[in-house]
Image (tube, rainbow, N blue to C red):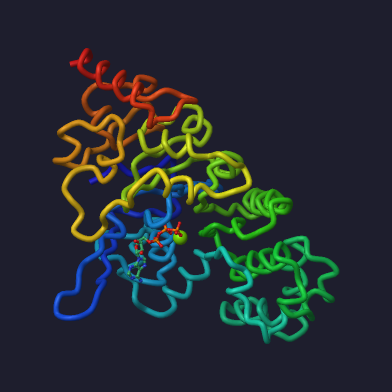
Length: 360
Ligand SMILES: Nc1ncnc2c1ncn2[C@@H]1O[C@H](COP(=O)(O)OP(=O)(O)OP(=O)(O)O)[C@@H](O)[C@H]1O
Ligand SMILES: [Mg+2]
């Protein structure tokens, strides 16, 4: 069981949520552990980033929170309400209005034969936000102006292919805003956009946070953008959240050896770190995962215990925590790995091991 990553009053909270998928057909389908009992909370007007390599379970978390699928374990609390227990349609509609999602590919999430206006009318109608055609038109125009798409009436009449990638993502944001949400789950919202317009979209999301009190779970491969946009950053590895900290502190002084590796693998501010990380590693086993820490095989500081049991949570400072045996056994921030150097450097591993020996 992990400590919940939370600061202050929670608006949306995951308690021990896990997800297993059946994969492979035939007589012996296998169980893939995509997510293993993760806990965290989003506060009001808070941005929490979720970073980690491909397949670590980031989108699975977002899909569970937005109820595109049900978790295998755990609870989801919205303003303290256990929403998985709420079946009546109205309660569920209310939750869907409050917790919205934005996807990576704005083109894929827009219907090519519908105008931009029609895309925005639908959620407004479903969630009862307009009572007449005139009001509906006004609401659509307001939404477009909120996301800086002007002249609104002209944009509303266009089709998705008549917009640029950045404009399409702004439409997706406007659509998410239509029901009046308090939480937006943004799954790599800028990674398919041209580099030059990414900051504009993040700034828009930031402004909506201030103006409308929206909280975000911001999923990204781009750790530099997490530093720019997110108050806190959580790091995922193979279905576990292994570290949570204020973004700036995490970048300055990563605690977990995996976080150190992630930061050492940010070669190019424009690119994702997917390929870089793949090159450095074998993927962790999600089907029949071995006991212990899933990062042990790649970890330069791995000890015997790391292959035997998953570490619990160690509180490093009031608002920082990590799941790593090094810290459970006495290491402190700054004694594991070395900032600025590659965490795969065997020299660092040796130093960390020696310090640990000394600490015992
Ligand atoms: N519907 C599904 N059926 C079977 N396996 C799935 C399903 N959805 C996700 N998975 C598996 O669960 C694991 C986590 O997937 P997820 O999409 O959450 O990763 P991610 O961190 O979002 O990766 P990426 O950065 O590539 O988007 C992966 O191994 C994936 O193959
Ligand atoms: Mg994903």
